[in-house]
Image (cartoon, rainbow, N blue to C red; front, side):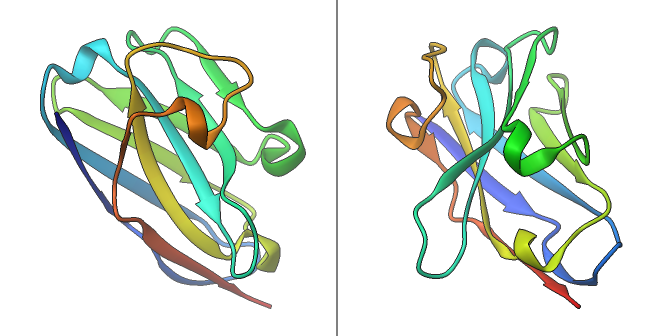
Length: 125
């Protein structure tokens, strides 16, 4: 079992930046693929970014991120981060941290095993 707790969300103006954090506890964090997903009001949860257990491989939803977001992890701290720059009002959503033992393409909510409760990001215009 893996417990995930997100933090770092909040209200930011368009063009601003935020860094989300996800602290993990439970089973060995370093063995898990970690991902960020988001869900806007009235929309389905969508993939944003993921990072392999070693941090050596990263995956992004190019249509969403377009070079603005960066995912990193610190296995010593059992934490994964999502740095978000040049935020837009359409980035407003609840952002969820997730974990999975195996990488399954395409990266989707169905392929993840554990979820945090989410952190709200609101981008004002």
